[in-house]
Length: 249
Image (cartoon, rainbow, N blue to C red; front, side, top):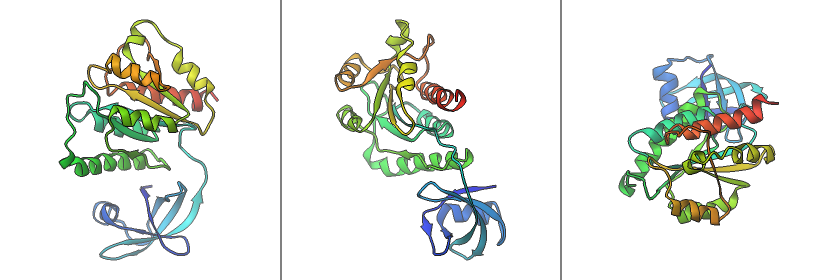
């Protein structure tokens, strides 16, 4: 059953669907009145809905049954990615959403080859958010991850104050055999807490960046004995979080 995130709430458990989702329902899926979909509300509740009305501009749905349960990770993991080349960030957003990431924060790192163009910012952010939305619908999420505007190091340090735990994936730690910080951190965390995890671009973070982050409460850790690509490391961490909190229970 197709899933859509809705933000237009009408009266009496009815939802209005517009824009791209309207086009997808009517033009792509060719649904008719009476067909059923799942609507996810801004308050992260899911409902099986029946299409009650289709006009030239919108689809109106009525709630048939509210769905209990959640597919969300028990902790909120925010992924900070040093701006990588090509479409690697799109891959991180898509697959990271499938694995349960809470939000994505691009990071303008010293070794980021890609330079952030403010003139193209809105278009780029819209594309990233659309990728997150489609991945969230495909993976039956009840929360839509947010993709933030890129931050510099100072701004990253500032937002770090709002998180319960802050980690840095640093390959030098992996080379030196560090293997306990991630597992110990997850063991300390309680359901509902927040984790900010920083990953460098190709070439990794500089020692100066790691030093500054450590000065401000971030802890560096290795991710096993192998050196992971910038687009692989966040997926490794999200998988580890899922294993610890969801599969070990």
